[in-house]
Length: 175
Image 1 (cartoon, rainbow, N blue to C red):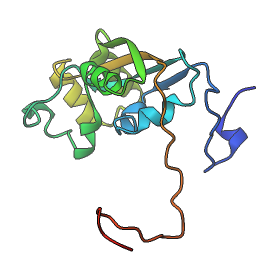
Image 2: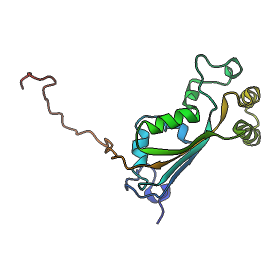
Image 3: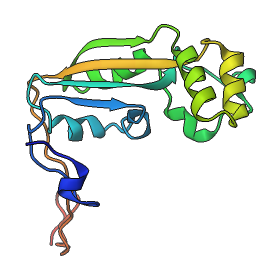
Image 4: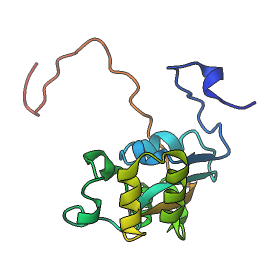
């Protein structure tokens, strides 16, 4: 029995803990996975020891300081979601939820990104020119594979009680 968005319907969330043997995200994780709370949410759906893998656009190395001149015309504030394999490794390892087995930049990943863009979006001259100018100096494809470790997963906050009960915030304050 597999899980799919069709089976659960649009707008409904899948909630079966430890249901999946593995999770793979291609070209999407950068848009939501940078949230510090997301890995805890995602890991609960994977069986202990199960792999979680991501691959997609990223950075060969983090940008320290201002955006390099050759990327200025293309770069927008939402692109700060792009990170290096080292950043992703640190982001996952510090949670204690994943044992990271692989975190690297794909060889010639920038070229794959460029080839794909020339095929799928040939009119996006700005991004194509940024990739051509960068030639893998900053832009590339990152991949990360980890296995869910034995750490206890915290239950996510899924709702807030509709009734407010006033309670003292500081010790010594009375009702």
